[in-house]
Image (cartoon, rainbow, N blue to C red; front, side):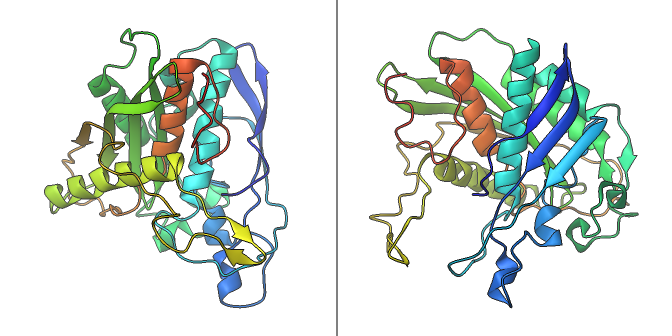
Length: 309
């Protein structure tokens, strides 16, 4: 997980006018040559430098980080930590402004429009043409509007229960999730339901997309609640699944509702499916925990941070 803390923002009564984002992370480029000390351009293009929100003053910093171990591949790559930071902080900004999180996020997204990725300093764009694959803010708005509508955003919930929202653009597809949680007085976390809305353009095999998203939800929950690798004396301490835990069926979401947004334009190029479902899950989960308990989770995995809430 990149370090450096969450972002800082200057807020005027109910809107953000300046945003500072620092991301400190090892680069997988260190696997192929001398340690670059910074995230590679393609890693920075996974939700760090290409923040598409309507904030007039934006500063992105990527300080040095030396790799002391081999860096391997991971599903959704740098989108996971970048989305966690951005979407968690948007929720905090909404709270500071006394605004509904959904309304505040949609205000940051702004009106439907196409953004050339190169204007966001993103020359990578998942190797796709910026002309064929611009950042489509209308599609991002639609997944947010769809998932909050289908999840019943704003409904009253009993004490210890909450809804959390997050959205992210990755692999030229658009994803938004609403996670519902229950936290007991003993700090036991259960997830009754997750809604996830997804727009990848034309869908060739909708059932395959649905299964990928269901798996992404479970994986996102697992990473947020349990996933941790630690080192001691230069060696990884976890050598199998008795030490590196994953979410089992008793802790998985009881219900996952997938909302695939149809397209009427088959001339639109296809987007990615296998990885975009993961990034919004951890921030949506932690935002839901805050709604249920008033406790902000800023460090993952969650593990026992809910004890005594």
